[in-house]
Amino acid sequence: MLLHMSSGSDTNACANPGAKMAAPKARFERLFRAACAKRRSAVIGMVHVQALPGTPKSGLEVAELVDQAVKEARLYREHGLDGVIVENMHDTPYISSVGPEVTACMTRVCWEVRQAMGGDLPLGVQILSGKPAATSLSNTDSTPTPFRAGANREALAVVKAAGADFVRAEGFVFSHVGDEGWMDSCAGDLLRYRKNIGADNVLVFTDIKKKHRMTLVGYLRQPVRLLWNIVTSPVWITGSLSLYSSHAVTSDLSISEVARAAEFFLSDGVIVTGQSTGCPASRREVTEVKESTSLPLLVGSGVTVENLDGYSGVADGMIIGSWFKEHGQWFNPLDPHRISTFMETLLSRVV
Image (cartoon, rainbow, N blue to C red; front, side):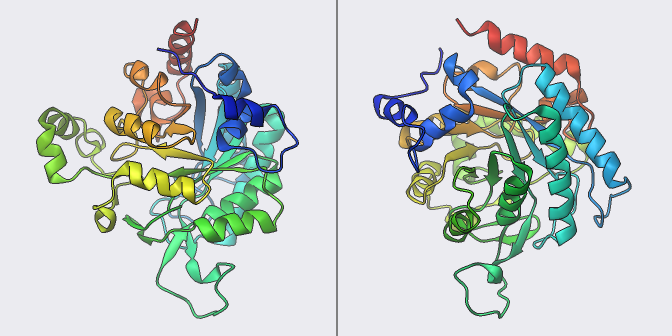
């Protein structure tokens, strides 16, 4: 099944490029016009920048970080991907307040990636993990608060300076607990910040219930999935967990309700993930979100050449990192053969 990307209202918005704030679907289609023209899901490759200065695993000079990121971005372009997103995934353990050195280095990396790729391939940014919520625009009291939001403002600043196109933002609506601590919502402050720095053209794609786990009741209803998650858990594969989040505080909200809240708070697209980095998103949840909102839908984890057909007919975009790496592990180098196999398989489905 091929994805029909637009509706009548979206077409009208897309036909008016001078519109100040077009509908999210139309903005997505303009950004990823090559994929949308072929009515297929846009494929966005993940560049995991090596550990930045000041983080525990750092060991490379900034110029070396840049060279490696540029090499990966060029490899994605050569294989016909529709976009690239740059992320500081190697900066573990994540903290709730990133320093200026992170923003500065990410700006340098993204600027060089943009120059290497040219201006026609969409470029995005995500910065893990957060900042003090007390620095928000709406907070006139300088007293620090214990609540934190994702480093989404920093990512927006990097996009603005580097000439990139979109950010991936976590904690956009509602709150959750990540492995780095409490993550507060940020939609109001983030979009006001976007307006203040003149970045209305930057799209904000937002994770909803990011890297969440099902409730016990949900697992009991799907015993096969429970067994699969046990067998394929990163604990057994790599000996360590990777990017889990707890959403117990919003357990009474379905993922479709969170998606609708993100749409109400002016998200440009929602991202659905599996329970951890590299784990497939629930197809049921992907379909549920698709049916509950008019926003572009992206699958943000666990897409492989084997499960591609389960997502490509529904998702507007797919963010892929782990499967493109050697042995399917996010921390390994890119594997050109895996990238080419995936893209050939995807394109063979398009008629």
